[in-house]
Length: 229
Ligand SMILES: O=C(O)CCC(=O)C(=O)O
Image 1 (cartoon, protein in one colour):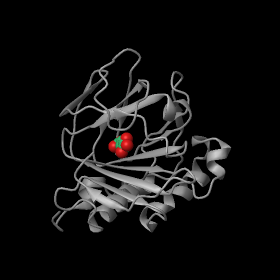
Image 2 (spheres, protein in one colour):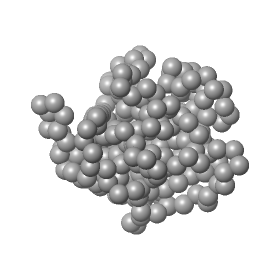
Image 3 (cartoon, protein in one colour):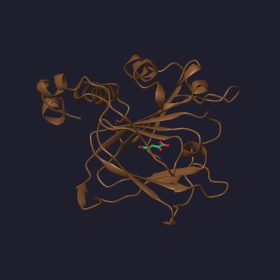
């Protein structure tokens, strides 16, 4: 990406940054236990510095649209662990909050305008308690009851009965645990415009950071970047 990006223009002014001091209420969903949403919980400055760090660290160079980090997470991501524990302990149960570290794996995804991700349940080699941070563009994430034997990156799930669309905007943070992590799939349909209620929202380039904890005894993979999702 060129160096001439105006980050303030993309993410807002200092004035907006200062306004964003209060804690965001945790939104829960009656039909999906363990699904918790923090609307615009990250300040403009936090969104800007995360995005900037991902680009500066060359995670998305060439055709790469996904990077995985295992083990100790870099400082620019690692602060999120104490941010969750100190500000939003209600996102997870005590067992998840007490584990150390809270997260030791990150997936960084870059979505070009209109791209999505196949509906899936995260692999069982990861513990309960996942966190998804949305940056740069909004999209609709669709939750659907899990197909039997669902694993990551299966064929698309076209079942629309009981599906639940969630609008994710830049700065939103979504926590998945319990049913939401194990019994529901999450995916993002490829499309240029999302429709929610009476709103039509055009997609732009989106980045997400997904944080998880590898189960004890599961093998770490090498941190890598890839053009697959
Ligand atoms: O991009 C997102 O919001 C979700 C990413 C995800 O589900 C994954 O990488 O497994």
